[in-house]
Image 1: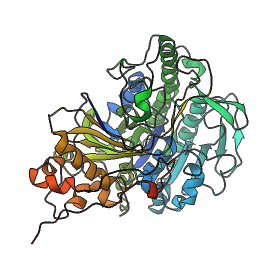
Image 2 (image 1 turned 45 degrees about the vertical axis):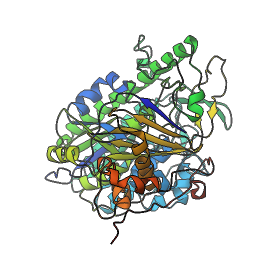
Image 3 (image 1 turned 180 degrees about the vertical axis):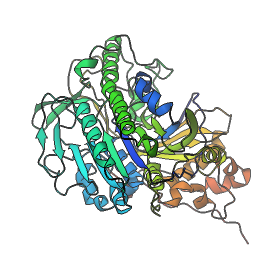
Length: 550
């Protein structure tokens, strides 16, 4: 079945490839939060970050994670590969987490390893990925880092008694120390240390957990998510803040297909509780805002701010009541996948905003290009355009008018309070496996999703009157390419469909002479709803390329 919802969103254009070249190799500071929203206005409550990074650099308004879940998203940005190529698709074994990262061989072949080989010193403080724990922290150590101060499970998501593992020393809990403040202090110390090595540039990953929910343990192995805990100095801020009431917030009629279409409308008690949850998220982000300011001040104090790129982003977005969804992520909706991305540094346009699409698979290529290190052939992404000329070319270029989005497994609300009921274990929603894509260009703004239930869902966010009879076969065909693409195929999916290069945009593919070709293509379909990437359950894998007869 096909269902469509018509809405209006900002337009998206395609991206290009170029980056400024500073006079010497730059330092790179990469700040990544956990579960931070873009569409619920969280950045508006971070004045230091807005002034020191947004206003001093460029905002990428249409930056996407390609899977809306912490661990697989982080592995994608560290490897430059989509989750179906990393095969890390969950937060814990057997399909995800740090053990799966090790099992797939990524520990020998990811961003810090490449940076060290290219002459960089590397540092990391905060959360690396899920299931990096007191049982797995040295089995083996994460490779490629000069100095580390990791948050590890089961204390990763505990704001005032986190579990820390530094360099090669055993993990310890640090009661009474606020997690984000420890990360800020560590980063400042390392900036001073790195500055002494004038012959070597550095890369520093800084990863606070805010505004992720806290884990509340009832007994060993039994826990639930509760609202994040702000630092004492930030408690009670924003007493009148509420979740933005946009058109998709708690709608009177169900939206979506599969389990989403069966959700009940929230009552006033649930909305009030979620508004309080929202305020806790904003409060928890205040220490992150201070961290950003402290890092920038330290770089300036050391005289290296002008030689340093600062990137600010998150692993995935968050929804709270949109489409009737309880607080959480894992969906292909814009709230979950369109996320904050800010960058400042040498040659970056100041107080600038762009609207073409970029994704987390582009981050590793972007960082390597900034570092002057050759790119890898197996990247599924491409360097982000970081100069005015490159940004203009990206806006005009049709090559990259798409982002692949995918997910495997269940979805669940991160809240103890249940809709219309008492405290209890958050509800799990099954059959949340899907393949999706965003088509984003001056002509189209589409989200097309095929669920493992074989329901097809189309959101047309530009409303141009295009015939669904013509549009849907084209969308399904390009998703057939993207759902298992590798390397250049992920960047140029139309070339797989039209090897002669005659078609490289959706607009060109809609020419009537291709109607029969697209009508006869194999269709995206699932034979089972798996909780991990199991190819045999993901239906047809090959497309039929278009050939002109002799």
